[in-house]
Image (cartoon, one colour):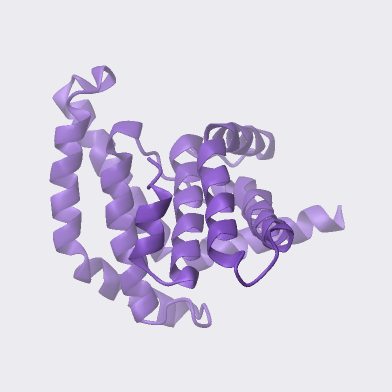
Length: 211
């Protein structure tokens, strides 16, 4: 789901808005990639598939950056910088999948999971979780944020169960419950373990560079 540009622009400052646009793209990648894998070739294939499926969201992010920043900078310069940022996300995405950064999110419930994930991100930013990526500080902020978003989690799980009931692939009630639970548990795990995930990504990049 791509938010209309006018709605996004009206919602926050340019910096916040661009961060939200990047978040929408990375969420799309995670949604479309599905379950991760420890195999490098399989992770790369999943990443390529996700990028192909998220091309519209990517272009929306590029155009949003140009729209917000072109009054201050040339459109060419803005385009170059946002492409650089997006390419950086895409370059590490296969390693991110291998590290357990994947969350298997059925398309029908993606909007609900995204709303919960956004709640966690906002709460963690307010607690300074990413200020220095200290594992202990980050984990404490993550647990506090999970508690703060518990009401949103319950609401979005209920919303997800209603959304997924219309999906023909999830007519079985047990399968629906398992899919919803997996998506939300996976989202919790991603936020709890993000420092460790990014450490793995860093080591994987260093290994590839040395090879």
